[in-house]
Each structure stands twice: as structure tokens, then as C-alpha cells.
Picture 1 (cartoon, rainbow, N blue to C red):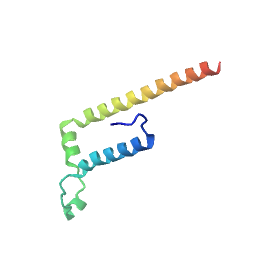
Picture 2: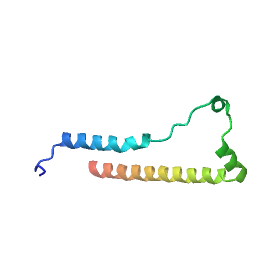
Picture 3: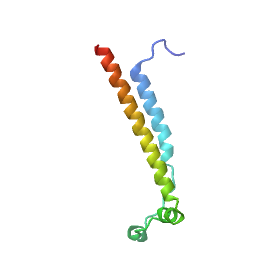
Picture 4: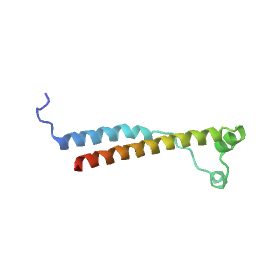
Length: 90
């Protein structure tokens, strides 16, 4: 049924088509009409509610921890790669 050799270009095309078909489901959301009040609205309800409850600081803390973790991971990976490059040239 399947050929012994799988052509890379054909697999790439099939993968692209499959991802396109799956991504089309993200477009299947309800359309909400935009009114004039939406353009004049300058408050963000979610942020105001989170700020009044004190939860905005928790959100900022979680984002800061995630950012610090990613930064630490990148720095450690860079150091490991630098050591491998030094050993390769030695």
C-alpha cells in the first residue's frame, strides 16, 4: 500500500494540508458585532477586577517566574553549547 521510499516533498505537502485543515476549526467562532461603545471603552474589566481583588500581583508574579525560568534555561543551554564548542576545537 505505502511505497518503500517516502518522498520528503510529498510528506511536507501532506503535513501542510493536514495542519491547514486542523487550523480551520480555530476560525469557527461566533462573530460579535462591534459597536460604537466598543471604540470609546477605555477600561479593561478583567484587569480592574483582578486589581481590586489583588490577584493581578499573582498574575504578574507567575509571568515573572515563567520568564525567569525560560531565561535561566537559555543561559544554561548557551553555556553547555559554549563548552561543547571549546571541546570540539581542542
